[in-house]
Amino acid sequence: MEVYIVTGGAGFIGSHFIRHLMKKNKESLIINIDKLTYAGNLKNLEDIQAERNYVFIHEDISNAEAIKQIFAKFSPAYVVNFAAESHVDRSIADAVPFITTNIAGTQVLLQASLSCNIRKYVQISTDEVYGPLEPGAEPFKEDSSLKPSSPYAASKGAADLLVHSYNKTFGLPMNIIRSSNNYGTHQYSEKLIPLLIRNYRLGKPLPLYGDGTNTREWLHVKDYCRAIDMVLHEGRNGEVYNVGTGDERQNLEIAELLLALLMELSKEKRVLTKARAELIEFVEDRKGHDKRYASNWDKIKKELGWMPRLHFDEGLRETVEWYLERGLLKV
Ligand SMILES: NC(=O)c1ccc[n+]([C@@H]2O[C@H](COP(=O)([O-])OP(=O)(O)OC[C@H]3O[C@@H](n4cnc5c(N)ncnc54)[C@H](O)[C@@H]3O)[C@@H](O)[C@H]2O)c1
Image (tube, rainbow, N blue to C red; front, side):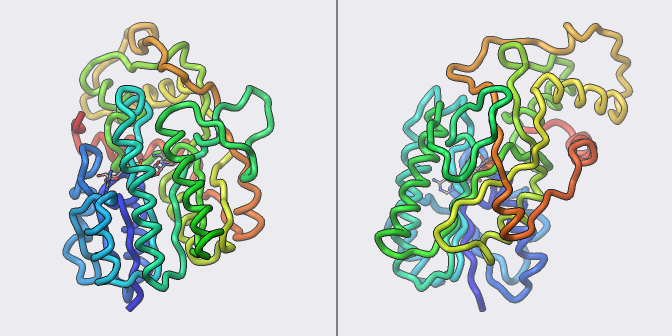
């Protein structure tokens, strides 16, 4: 039985990826290692927790001894590392957990992977490692230099370099995937889309940093899971793959699209006659806030034939419907 170790599987993207793997690998064993920080929630995996080929292990990836034992016991063929402190604002308030989990934790997983005959280690990175892109500039390629702005992005960039070094020094088979902003169901409510939905439901204005013109490229989490699966099984050893959509949106546009959808779909039928100025609140900008991220994802398209399938309008509608059905989210 092939064993997959997925870390951070109780979080947003990790839980979607485990569900994706479970659907297509009935004969594989999927181990989810998660520390269950504020961002981890086992309810994200409620529908599969009783499956016979799924095991949850409550552990911290930076605990070297425990991770070594887990790897020795299960001897994984594949390791996919989602576990991370993932919120930029928190890294500005306190970078320490970002260094411990995102950098030291990654090194622990790499070291443990060396002791097993693994087929592939995949590091889930981010397009934020490239730093900001000027308006109108060409999107970053996989070999663009790393110029992270936030302690979060710097910790992810440092982890990428460690993964690269384990490939060069020890021959560890690996890939690094750098994706744009994901959206979809099961996301913790501090991130933009669930945060705006939550505030709307509480009757509060939708907060946007600065003037709301920061631009991000949006990717549906299910499309991302297909990309990770392809890279894990077919990606060329040692390569980095960007994953994006080319669908760039300003935060203000996201807020306006959400308001329109919420007014249409909300069961409360709250009549909103307020002016936009009352519905959207511009708040003091984040320190070092990057204006724009965008990456060139021709490589995964050409080499592996991956393309996003879900259009943003469709994906956003489905996402809003899901959050509305589930009522208020955890703060
Ligand atoms: N969400 C996005 O838009 C996005 C975009 C690009 C890259 N990423 C990357 O994708 C990965 C997953 O992001 P997400 O949005 O699902 O994050 P998330 O914050 O929703 O989930 C992170 C998960 O990791 C777990 N975790 C944290 N520290 C841990 C530790 N020390 N040991 C074990 N588990 C630990 C948490 O409990 C949680 O379940 C991260 O590595 C992130 O950097 C996310």
